[in-house]
Amino acid sequence: MPSEYIQIIRTQVLTGELSPYKFFDELKDAESADVIAICEWITSNLSIKEHPSMVKLAFTKLAKRRHLPSYDKFLSLKKDWINSYYNEYQFVEALFENARKGAQCNCSVYQVSRFNVPPYQEDLERVDEKHLDDVDFGVTHLVYVRCKDCGGIWEVGIDYMYHYPHSHWSKMRD
Image: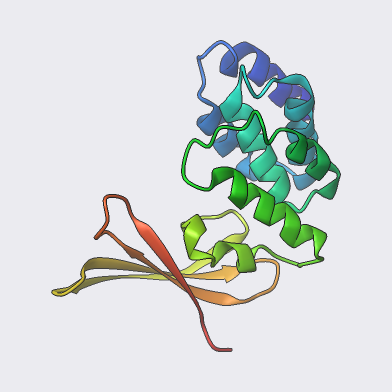
């Protein structure tokens, strides 16, 4: 299976026919071992200077899967990594550090407000959703998610008062 995805990278992604984001969306249903193999291939064969989105997305996938063998290579790219959005490198680094410390899941990183992580991560299961129309604070979207790894349930409030949606994480009581 990884060879099929590598062929798609060569024939569709690198030619511009398929965006890196759509490619990684298609990986959602792939086996974890295959995703790791594909991401390792990307980080070994593509340059961050020539294909920054592909390399960044691959390292993000590896970090979310707590794949520590990739951590040193990731750290070596710090001088070449240009953040596409605020704290992008720091977020991936925090995921790897979280794994290095032995965490069983990524919840402790997701809840850090400076990373502004939306609740739509593949290691989270959506439990419920609510839309609140608050006169003082505008529309707030509440998403309740369960971590597939630790079982913890989180309320993630998404507010739209800023010029982009901002996520606020709160752990629900057991």
